Image 1 (cartoon, rainbow, N blue to C red):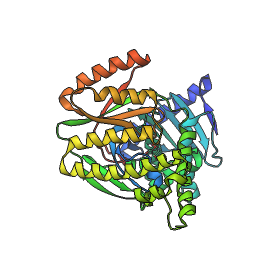
Image 2: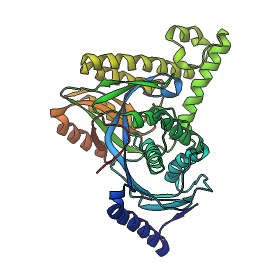
Image 3: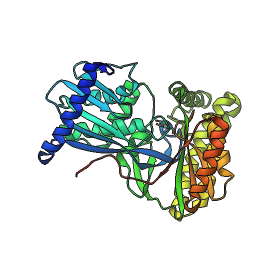
Image 4: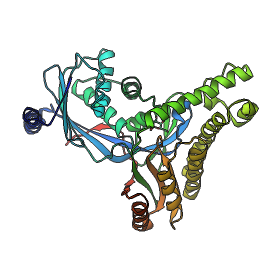
Length: 403
Ligand code: GLA
């Protein structure tokens, strides 16, 4: 396992890999030996921090992608060139271990490791990653890469894996190899995304169904605050622990041992233990319970075509994430407050884990340019940093591209 860059030999090796892939692409495309995978990011319309509490979410896979091109290389090595990092990396299948220096490599290693421990027959392969999906901004570039690598492996080695198992392998890679104790939201969205649809997810049994996503003359606008989530790993895992603590306290205080997670607790049940648990933990639980209700309300609003209502629900969700779950930041609050002042904006909230990253908003299509101009200027004046704007639509989940 090694990372190679910045020296002559290293550059040569990178060039060799690129040449190999480019030549193969030309020569082997007819033989179908080269595999291209398109793997989307995700936007979560509503249902934040509910996945690991066995609640509900309503995400979409988005039309921004990781694009992977790979071939088998008849060796024991996996070699990668990631064009976002402009880095080449190589590791042996017989020695896969966590690399604390090259963080991005762990998402790939973790997934490959899963296929090996589940006894799937795979050998070395080489691939290039291209992307128009920004990294670390809350649109789940990590799940896009995990699922992209999984689909590449499945295609290259003719593995017949159920999509839900692909989800589980990728989720396990992130939890057990990378070390972020995430829920299933991101991986399910990237695997099961569907063009023009939102995915209603029930994490209790990992089931999903599709809701036509028609915002009429409104659009989904994501604004990347560019605030990198340095603390996210620790704080994210801490929120998970706090949720488990409430469940344990509930069981002990009421003697009801049948409760397994926060989504099995309703407001009345929470009220019964309110004064007996720390106020902070009460607020954590309040967020999860109210967010599950908001997902159901948003689903109904979407089905009825009541887009204004979705905006109102987004605003309520932000308040809850900010005050009760405490995962917002000054920048995210600023973006949500400022965008809501503009004509043609129905609502906004922080999206994803929080602690930085981005916000999602529902905006009138004809006002888009005006909104981008106003927020772009205000944001740079306030934080001396340029926000990024991503307009997105629901897309299909990760799939093999055929040219
Ligand atoms: C991150 C995690 C998801 C989910 C969200 C919050 O994106 O990867 O599993 O918990 O945060 O909803």
